[in-house]
Length: 329
Picture (cartoon, rainbow, N blue to C red):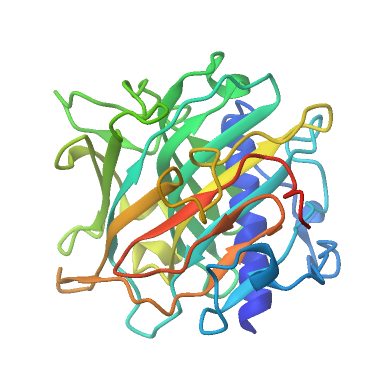
């Protein structure tokens, strides 16, 4: 599978889980007729003709970028047809796989409308064969899902075997919680970063246990991550063995009747003093060793005119945008 087609495949499934979480769905069993024979052509890919460097001067030719806009082949959830945009980095596939990730991200809040969602997220994925599994964790503002416009700790999982299963937070059995943890999925994160004030952060660690194979989630608000729960290995197909990719960045979605929300801080990555940052990114190997993420990871960006990323330098990058097309485009 080519890098572009793999990126499309990943974005397609990530779009499903984020739209599902955002609009308040519980476990959804996807009809096989809905997804049979899905291809990049069916996904209606629109390649952007403009140069990535024109859209974001901080990106240079040494960074691999895919500028793609994915439209779901069917509305998901069916009554909404959410339109989803990404600005993220994706690790390159390797034979040994990935067994965890650690990263610290700024946390923001917005006054969003019904039908809008904005999130900073980490995906741990396996896209081998026909079984596509995912774990997603991060922060999210989503009035449709949480019935408010506050910032929440958001988690979810996808199992795509004989029947696709999708679940967000604690909507269904799956995530096994740690008793006594001070933070749980769907909890409100407060305070958040505002204006020129101090940056508020969450540090996320997702780690595959070597003995049980379970995937543990850790989270720390302005501090070191602590265990909040785990996904049993038996919940997944291929992800029970390893992850093939790690994705980090911003995701937004909107219903057909609403405008685009801001992503990250609402500033473009070129505004380094204000843009949202994901930093101290480390990838975890099978033996538990963590190493800084490389600077040569490919970016996955839906539309440079609206949201973008800075180059990955020193295990750190900026991302986001104000929801408006840049005036000089």
